[in-house]
Image (cartoon, rainbow, N blue to C red):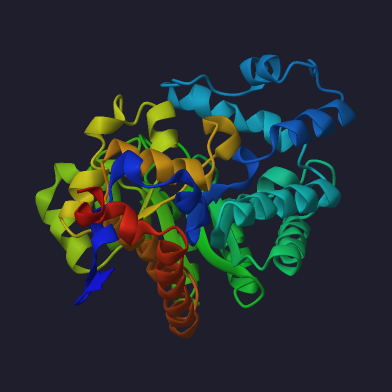
Length: 371
C-alpha cells in the first residue's frame, strides 16, 4: 500500500527481495567485455573449429582456459583473453557472440547494453578493425530486433599498446560515432602504463564530441582516476575501487556526478578486493556517488546481470528502494541522448511500480500483515 510518496515495500531488503523480482527489474550494463563474455558452450564449439584442445567437460575447459576464482596476478589474468580472442577472428563469429551476449542480457532484464572490445585484437585472419566493428554492430542489431534490447559499442584501447595504435582506434570510434559506437575506452594493466601516454587518442575523441570512459582505480591508486578525469577527459570511470583513498577527489566525483562502473564479481576474482564485504560499493552509495552495477566478464567471473544484482543486494543488505536507485544510476549514466535517457527513465519508473504490484510487495512487507 502507498502512504504519501512512500511505499511499505521501499524497506524490503537483502535476501527478502525475491530473486524473480531482481531478474525482472529493468537494468543496464555499461561495462562488459565482449571477449570475456562468451557463452561457454559457444567458446567450446568455436575452439574446436579453430583446432584448440577442447575437453568435453566444461569444468575442464574452464580450468584450462579461464581464470581461477582468485586470479591475483594482473598479467596472468589478462592473458586469458588470448584464448577467447583466438576464436573471434571472423566476421561470423564476432556477430554470433555479440548477438548471443545481447540476447542473454535481454533475458536477464537488461534494457540498455554497452559492449566494449578492442577491434585491433580481431585482425589476425584478414578482418579489418572497421570490419570487426561492423560485425559486432550487426550482432547487436540482430539481438535488438529479436528482443528489444538497445545500446552500443565502446571501442577499447589498451594501455600497453603503441599510442599510435590507440589514436587509430580513437579515429575509428569517431568514424562510427553516429553508427552505434558510443564511446572510447582505455583498458589493460594500469601500473607503469599511464593513460596520459595516449593523450593524442583522447584529444581526438574529445575534439570530435565522442564519449570517454577509462579503466582506472582498479590496479592502481586514485592518482590514476585523477589522471583519467583531468588529463584524459573521462566522462565515466571503469571500476574506481580505489577512489575512496582520496577524499577530495571522491568529493569531486560525487559533486560532478561522474559515474563509477562497478563490477563486483570481477573485482573479487582479480583480487582488487579480497572480501566483497570490504568493497567500497556501499560506502560510495552512502556518499552519494553515481554507482552503477556491471558484469565486466560474464564467462570469466561466472556471472550475469541478475546474479550481480543478487550479489549486491545480499552482500550490502540493500533495500528495494536503494536497489531501484542503483539501477536508475545505470540509465542516467548511459552514453545516449538526454531525450532517450529521459524516456527510458520514465518507462523504468513505471515498470518498477508495476513489478511491485505484480509481486504484491507492499503486502509482503507491511508489518500489519504479519501481526
